[in-house]
Length: 424
Image (cartoon, rainbow, N blue to C red; front, side, top):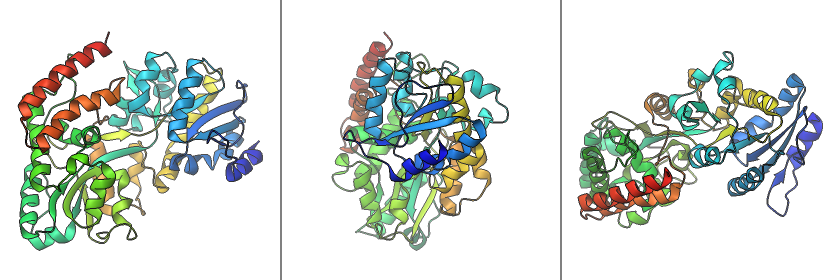
């Protein structure tokens, strides 16, 4: 099986649906065969390239089908809704799918496997990613790839201005103002400003001001004084020191402003850092620096979220074997293998070794951010897109210099109604 799998993996066969069949995945599993559905992703390339090691150790056969991200989501919804037993392990997006899949009864409870395996060590996984795959004290997945919000900045502009790297949001605003005043062709700050797209980046500001999307009692948290201060600060930063048209910008546009040398500071996910460090794409590749997200009134509370996790369908007939695969794929050794291939894992122990391919200041920012990070970058609800539209409206109002309090009053009421409907 190993040789057949390896050869199919290398050559592949693209179907009309766009899926890459690596080794079958047809029909219900057998006791010695595990059917796995994954996304085309660097993690898949790095870890599953060595799957023959798992097969040799376990005596199990692995059959994998790889899809694009959207196709995988579509296939999982179709197959799991049909209670199909031809998937034993699947890649899922924790913040988008775990709650929905659990609500539909599609996920196996992995708590006993995860929390009793001392050698594999669930406690080694960072708190934020752990929380994203845990509902009501039930472990429903194991996080794979993670990303954090960090501060990108121009080292040359700070040096010319005689400034240190901002440690607080107040210092960030002061530095943005100083550099913009000294450099008429440079904006002090850039980040995402489009309504829904801005939510994931604004969240680190929200948390660092001591607020959250949802209060402890399950009602909206965006009407609190702390949230109002966060919305106002973010809007002021982009209105006063950001480029025109920022309310239409998601990450490609904001990153373009920064990599063209037109912004001093940029808050963004660390997973996108190569866009700024690659000389082929960035005019500031030799002067870009990275730092932990600056402290707000509640400290530095950047997002630390898993973009992917492994889970087991409740309809699988091979749940014990499925866990054996997950245990192998997410052990400390394979987490390092993935990390060496640019996929930042969720294990704290992965940071005990140097990351030669990651800039040293970025690695330090990632390490420190993981210790204080929050494991979600938007409201953790079933209808994420609707929620992002609601809580994103006041961001746009703030950037445009409108009545932030009025916008938040309206959004707070709409979000409360939304949450009540979700909990019915």
